[in-house]
Structures are given as C-alpha cells and as structure tokens.
Image (cartoon, rainbow, N blue to C red; front, side, top):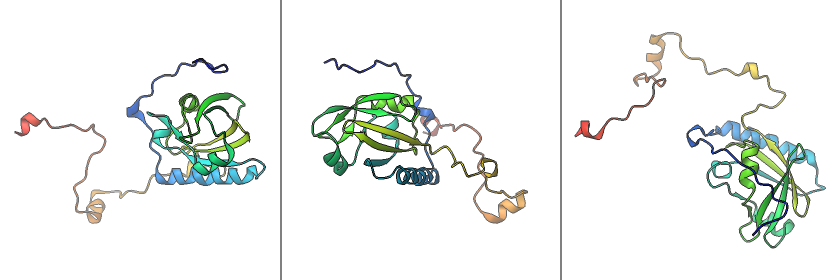
Length: 186
C-alpha cells in the first residue's frame, strides 16, 4: 500500500559495537532539563516526556507512548502522525492505536536526529496528528555549566598510595580483551 506524503529516505546502518550508553547521571540530567522545558512550554498543548533507551534508538526502533495520553489525545485508529523537529522539518510516522506507539517513520526520525540512549524528548501535541518534538541530549551539558570544569576523579600519585586503598591487583584496562581458547584450556 502506498501512502501519499511519505518521502523515501536512505539511512546508513549503525554500528552496534559503537553504541552510546548514557550514565545514570547523564540520563537523569537530561530528564531534569526536559522537565524544565516541558514546564516552560505551558499547558496550552498536551506534552509527553520520553527518555530514550537503546530499543527506541537502535535495533527495533519502536517508541511506545503512555496509554492514558494516547487514549485521551490521539486518534483511536492507526494513522500517520507527523513529528516536527525544532528546525521545522517534518517526519511522517505510523501511529499504531492498539499498541499506543510509533512504528514506521520513527526509525528515520531517530537516525536523522542521531538520537542516543539517555536523550530525553518532549513531544508537544500541536494538533490531533502532529507533535512538535524537542530533543534534550544526555551527552550535552546545560548552558550554565562550564565544560572546562569537568575532571576525572583524582587518582593517587604513586604506587604506595594505590596499594593502601585496595588489596586488589591493578588491572590494565587499556589493552584489548583477549579471549582464551577453549582448546588450550582443556
């Protein structure tokens, strides 16, 4: 079945080995910034805050939406819903009413916007079949934080100090993991 309004796009296959996994702190920070944005948008239009996980941005590319929101505000039948990004670009997506989520077209939106685990999205329903989507990156710091002040935790300066804190042997994590062969261990 051909649907008028869909634009064919070509997407590169992502490298699953180079996935970004957000830390709990980065994920929480993105959620807090998204909550602030959601608050600033006001209550003229209903909103959903959706933190991104790997299943949303790679592999299956399925985005489940809150059932209550869908039953209250979205169409009761499968329909094309448009996602409009902050630049005004529009992405038609397939909304599945019975499953309360976005399927076809969500993958393209996710890839085009390079969404990653930990990002938080605010969906603002600006008409019955159109969301304005705001992306809050987990990998970005808020504007008021100084990126130069981020440092790794302090480590002891000499070997004696390291040994005082732990009885565990020091592991060199810079080398590639080498798997032992099953034949040599038999």
